[in-house]
Image 1 (tube, rainbow, N blue to C red):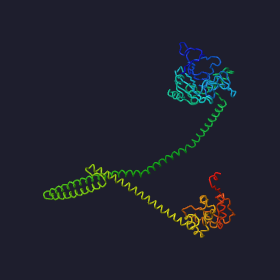
Image 2: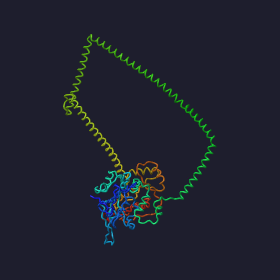
Image 3: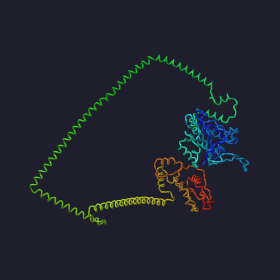
Image 4: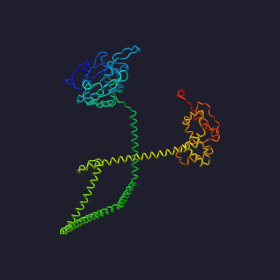
Length: 598
């Protein structure tokens, strides 16, 4: 755990509240400055207690006076304005924030590069803290400012930092140590302690100026200029440039003149407006009178427009009252009808009673009993027959007989479940039967198509599908020409007899082109019109063959697919077909995998 060590070079002074001591002036004054791992102040917490009074910090060269001054400067000013070690008269960039955080204290020579590099007291695993407590002794309030630094990479880059402000006194030993190894744990502890965390200088500077009552950045700039000042050449120039706000007299005079001209123009506009108002007064009065008449007209018009609504409302009230009277009369009639029905029912019951009394005096009662006994006997026999039938079905189904109402309900549930299972099985069987019927229908259709295709192949020399041949016959008949004048490309070419082994490969490569219809140029317009004028239901590719085509011969190289093909000499589109094959069948044939690999 770190300990707090006072700076030994601090000259003793009177305590702030000692008897007879001068009172501390108003405003915020430095109460205590603390540093941890700042420059050569390593590991131990160093405290510089001022307690609001003036103090003198002395010591030899290199004892850390400028280090504490730079700590105070870092605490108050942005990084872009700080010139470190300026109080000791050092050159620019002799020290920087990285050197203070890592604790550079000497240099060592690198033999490999014949250069020097600084040696630090600390690495990336430590953190540095600067803390200052400012107190207004008149009001008894405190402001704490602190900054925490750490270096993610000890070899390159500037340190990371965050800023802390609080409205109560804080110390490094209490609030900034013993938090673990993660800097985020320190952030969370400070937030729980009601401190405010800032990630950049602008919000921190705003809180700093608001807390210390600093009206502008000029005061901090003046502090930066005077904190390490050694001599003043001209006091007037120093006060004018450093302490007084800049004032542009010419701009202010121009502003006054422009304001006077604006006031003059405004006065002229007011005078002109008054004259216009005086001239337009009668017109305004006439307009007001006209507006009043128009408002009266609008009022009368609105009243006239409302008259239908008024009468409709009055009629609605009358009809509502009449409806209420009619509903009351209806209720009275309904009640009267109900009483009449009740009286009628009472009279009927009285008549029935009298009839029963009359029947009771004779043998009518015995006759009714005989009829009832006969009916009940027939119902008993029917129920026994149904029970016997039910027991027979239970026995066939392998179920126990019914002995009481509970067993009857159990058998009913079992029968319901069995019916459900049978219905499901019947449904599945019907679905399977439908599926098989569909498959049978599809197989029948496919068999018919295959039979027609076989018959077509037996009746022709080529392997052109029958549906394309039928389409060609229809097309030729519509155009009025012979089907032979519209050949398919596959009918005009074939694999040489001595190259029959390559027939399958050639057919797979050229199948799409072989099924293409060749149309002479003279008939192309009629063919195109017939094809485009109807839905064919299949894919038909056809090409226009010019009447005159330059002579083209197929190569005789048997290693090429072209050399394995031959075209009918009597075909009218031989040269056009040869030219097409030169681009479509220009493949090298490999007889085995070794040839294919080469």
